[in-house]
Length: 262
Ligand SMILES: O=C(O)CCC(=O)C(=O)O
Image (cartoon, rainbow, N blue to C red; front, top):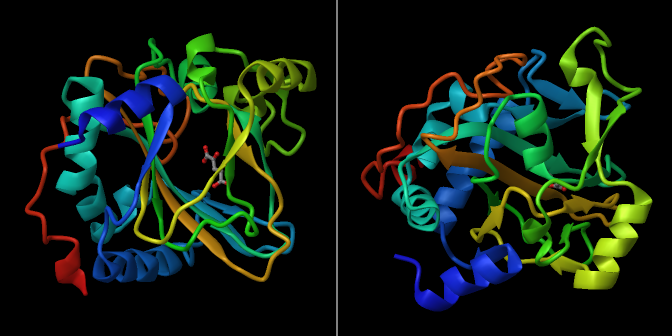
């Protein structure tokens, strides 16, 4: 159960970090799973310019250990408490931020989920599980506190790197420099750090991104975006690894299911 201070922080700032949410054993299980899943050859893998994998979308569909993660009581109970309802997984992803890898432009996760996947309301949480320490020096997440109060502020632009210009997914929903300046003047800009095993809970309308990692330190993070079961995306424009087809409520497993894979 999240305490009152944690819930207030989440509601006011748009996010909160819970240290030691997962044990070192669980972190080890998830790290091994992430490295294995990133070896997949399919279109669910996003690659750097040199071909190395840095993202896997939908990892909970491909590996039992990530199925255990999305049913972990720590994750499910926190999500249900903050959203006040049963929840489903809209999207999951592994993000491996290697030295000199990609940036992540300023965006709101809800931008694409609403306009492309058809999720009606801005009710949902981006949950991040840190498998490495996120430090100021290895390109941590950067975010605008309080930006969730603004609703959708991202605008549509054609993504020149999109592999398929006929599809709705050719658009990106980034934040313009003018909007970003206004938000930062009004609310500030912060880095989100924490040690491996921490769990970040972030409202899916918070404006966030990350810069290039020029440090020698790897930065491996898992993301699980959840929404209340009455807030479903039903456009089905994108494959399941981007956007859920299964809206069953997540029921928490036994606490030790994930650790049992060790
Ligand atoms: O891990 C990162 O650097 C950012 C990832 C992100 O913003 C996202 O997946 O929505």
